[in-house]
Length: 190
Image 1: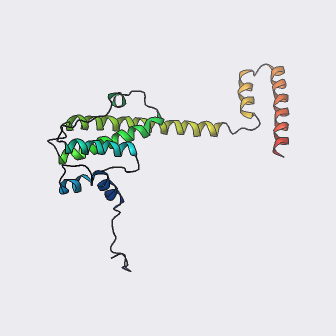
Image 2: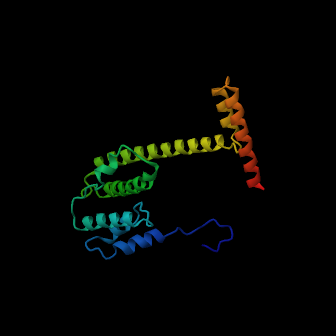
Image 3: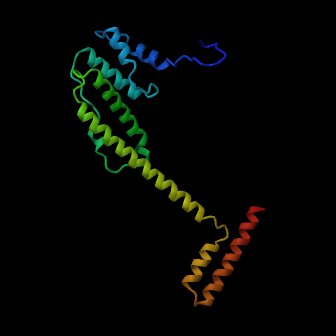
């Protein structure tokens, strides 16, 4: 199939399935069909925290325990979101997504679905808020960067001039300082 010249067929990337199946293979009391189903869960296998959380869910499932959505409440209800929190919020959101996915397949064990849905929505809102804040900060940074392209202090001179229009002595003194600074900047460029 992979040698087909027309490229109509392809093999799926099974690395995540193989990784997850090896991860849960030695957990007892889980039928093969359930192991296959569990391995299809939406897991980011590159994040060890998410993988460990997934493995904990599967162990509790094998022991037939009631499983609650175990996301810390201080993460969910955090009101002052910074752009640096985005990765952590996304990590917890992926954990909640995994819980919700497993709760639809194993509702007798994953009994906290409504709370998990609420947490997922709150985390989504927090992520959106942080992304919006990041976008606003980037625009402000770009705007400030564009406004500060004045190498010779001409902007400061105009501001100074508008403040002290009537005082010619101060204006002349400031102008001579600006000329000296401009000359020094030109020497540095050479």
